[in-house]
Image (cartoon, rainbow, N blue to C red; front, side, top):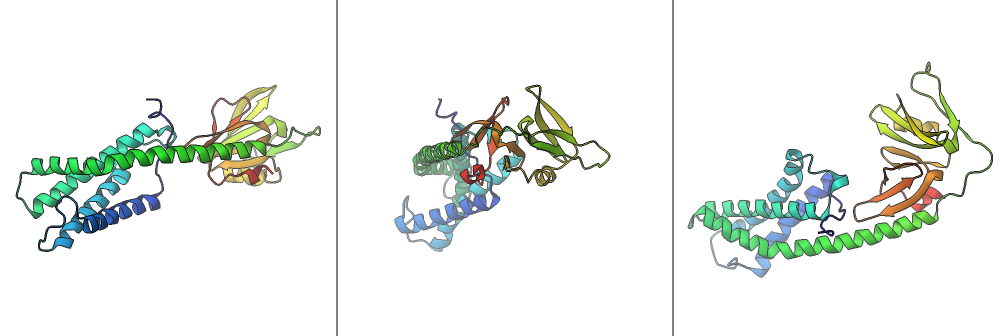
Length: 279
């Protein structure tokens, strides 16, 4: 049960979703032609067109799984909450959808047996072919990604900056409106900033207590204002952090996260963030 609740990356890239669907369909089509399982080797009219229909069914099943289901169940498909158990459930739904499409294809091509009998036959076939490779792939992918991200976190941790210098470095943040007074604080007081649409939330220390202030300014504009400070890094599209406040860097199969001093919520790290960003 603990393994099923382990973090796991959710496929989000549109490009890779289409690629996965296309390659799955092609693989099934080639597999049926080469190995001729489940009677696929019978000599029938338009045999290769008939077999291509199963490849198309697989392509459509994968596409529906990764494009339609996330739209229908937005709360379920939250990348930051995605786990191995949810991935297995998603792929089980994919197998079910593919079985339905394969059954429809076979039923309307032949029509020799009832649809429900055809469906259960193809459900058994699809499960027997897909279940073990699916679970095995998830298991090895989770192990591989966990190992890679843990090693990456360890490398990044070794590159953490030294303690702040004795002299005080001032940070000045100006809102979009020039009429607003700028926020002035020392570098050691600035902890991180989080994007909030057209606004940005500034988290900083005030008498050693973490406080925050929402100002009208994009994160990109803030990054430009603070680009002269090597300690300020954009670790994610929604976060700017002060690397001097990093206490630890952790990794799992889904992602890397940074823990900042006095901040209870881990900060996500994009894949482009590397140990060179700490040098």
